[in-house]
Image (cartoon, rainbow, N blue to C red; front, side, top):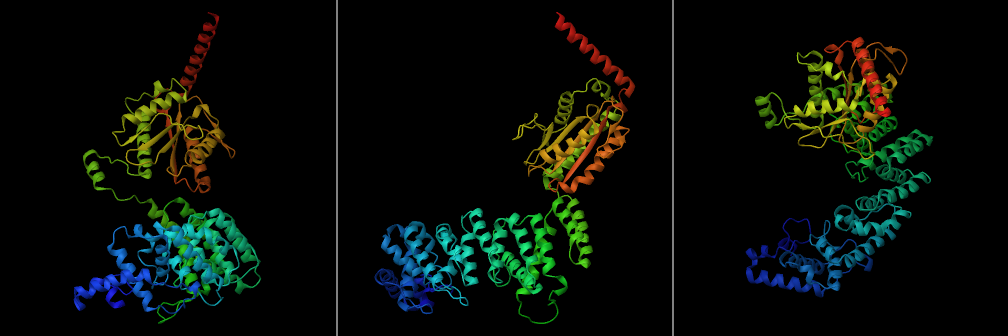
Length: 581
């Protein structure tokens, strides 16, 4: 019966009664169909909590499953015609299916979540109540962990008391955690349970599972706690065992999946975990399998792979933060002979990250026609913006039609912002936009921002008239305002610090002592300062310092100072006269 009604052999039945026609003819096949559909309502299947054996499936039950499969396959909206009693009986049939649940069970659950959910929970609780330390579930708990995502939200909440209780079987605990971690149970609630379990008396089997669960939802608290637990163990073998079992519980292996949630999958946390695992899962103790024939991989093999997967995540993550992590790993790796390898990967990564993504055909065509291509992402927009400002710098400092001397007539940053914004808009050609001064969520306003034409990744510009500010203030504005504030948004990782020099100030005190005796020396000091503090801002990929020296094509410093003094005196006299009138 099974071979005639099953297409692929994965389940007891798929309800394919038409496969019988070739052998037995249409009348017999139709009679089989009708009998099976009638039979499932008349027969009463037993579940294991009702006394059904765990290692047998009666032929009558398989015949009823076949009838259900046929009805679900051929009757549109079949679940809408079922009564709650029919739904409960169908759910009991479903629990006896081979290799997971029948394909129709999610639809049944969707129509009767209360009835079906109650049966699922009853059987899972029966399994947990009768579990032993050396057995494991091959029944509803197992199937819900692997195939029951459609019911996890309801089931998981009801299973939290079982998760909080004492478990004696690690595999069943893994299945429970798979259900809960794949549900809508909050990270906070799961972290509270895992933290309490991980912090109790150390157990070499269960503690690694709970630490992995905790790291998956609250790595900021869990990773230091794991490091402290490892350090507190006096036996090196126990330390290694905890590390082996933890990292396999977190990331999975050949015989188990890593089912932890993914809050730890950041470069910073992965770096910390890798260095921690490298300390206790030492590379010099690795098992080398290559070229040594057939072998059966064990816990150590899985742990080595998982430890290396932490490193691979960092190596393959683009951006500055991952590069800085590799450099830190070069300095801090517990195995001295591995440090040069970390440094090699850091340098290789920097080289690869420096490469631009290939242009799209439309960009190639545009460049061929206009010798310029529209930026397609935040990084390209930053380079494009730097080039545009360098063009403006050259025009004002060296152009035959430079208006530098006119611009030297004011020291107001608002006037420069209007001029530079207008100049950039005039050169945009639809490839970017420069909106008016935009207000951010905290009421702060970047002076200018490049915005892409086809993506959301603005490049902020912080504009300062260098003559108006002390050296320490300029350093603070670059670091705190531009790098720390305007570039904290995940959409923006590159910015521009733009200084204009009109010629009234000759020198600037520097933050670390000393003095910049010229505008060029100030720019060099700012660039050097950023190179020093850059590692403190892993989210900031790059920051350009650009200076426009209006004295190169305009008036000299002495003349500007005299003109500025005269202008301010005239403004003062005019104000005084207005008050007198």
